[in-house]
Image 1: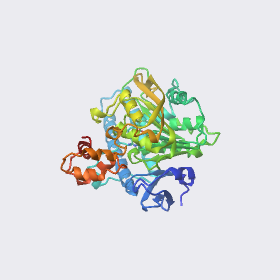
Image 2 (image 1 turned 90 degrees about the vertical axis):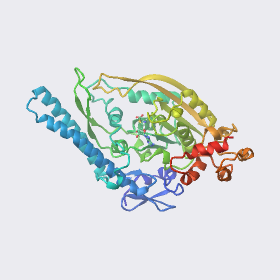
Image 3 (image 1 turned 180 degrees about the vertical axis):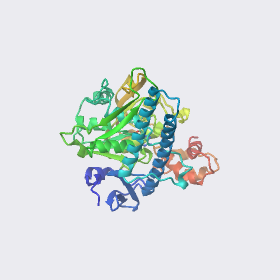
Image 4 (image 1 turned 45 degrees about the vertical axis):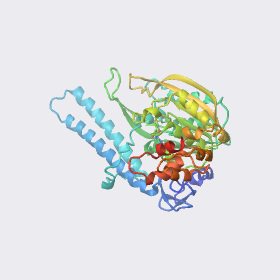
Length: 452
Ligand SMILES: C[S@@+](CC[C@H](N)C(=O)[O-])C[C@H]1O[C@@H](n2cnc3c(N)ncnc32)[C@H](O)[C@@H]1O
């Protein structure tokens, strides 16, 4: 049996089967984990738990996505190869194309090798052809930002982005120690902030959760396995006086205090987080609140669900909501603060800064973002202090008093029968949804009925 992260009792205590949301997880044979309650088998990638609602079937999805990514990458590499065969190339153009070809080919092979070592070899699955493609290479530049741009070996001016991210959070928590605490980073990306905070504040457990296995595998390789990795960074556009590509050797971070033993990566969808309720002292959402694909109010509910009584939520990042998010969910900081307080959090401290983001040393072009950083402490008992909180926050239980104002909606009786003082609008909508005609929004129906 593979000796894996679950050997740490601190990790095993916080994990939950995402399929039944009932059982804990225990290591099994064949590089897998099983749920102690429903028996669902889940996947390990290397030594990283990969916990999805469909269990081990997620392996086929990753294999399909890797094959799709490889196919897309090969198309581009092929166009470079074809261009290199042209008879009208001057030596400088040939050199540039050759450099790009080498870099793209290297990255493609590196990603394929990382997944292959974790037991995920690319394979196109016809039955998954219609599914949305998850681009594992989507946040590739975060790897270089996290683990290369501030390297003492960098031939360029060293980036201060990672140090600034850390400093921004430390300033907010007044450099207190997190000894004895369990910390979760939701949307941890390539893991650097989770690592830096672990080293600075030394909590007992630091869990880095993300649904991008590539970013986590790189972090896991550097932090846990202490193995180097070479990646190529390329300039999309010519930058005068700058090299079009650079090969970075990512080094494992220094770890004199053996902090890696307390750091764990879990690959999962935050919306089906395989985590026990109220199991963390601190939840951090760095550059995540706006890009997680969901209604930010539900993220408030998720963080509240995961925090222990009195626990702290630390958010840091912009409000650059994903384009597909409906306008009503692209909330301002004021609207979000209102929801956060309505959910029973006390805003402890906050600040807004303008910072450069993903300022690659190879690029002259710069992005400037507004970063909202706050710390808020949860009081689970305060959540329903406003008698209408359930209406705006769909994770707050609907009080039975709503039954006093019944209306004559056709399926109202069914909805009323589901109000028990425990279920929220979201819970009722989940029960109702399978019984509604396709395309009908269950949440809106529940609200229409209950919010008379
Ligand atoms: C903008 S990046 C920020 C990454 C990291 N926090 C940082 O600051 O470098 C957003 C991250 O959230 C992750 N993410 C987005 N939606 C997610 C979801 N539903 N569950 C888990 N991770 C998610 C992405 O994979 C990505 O790594």
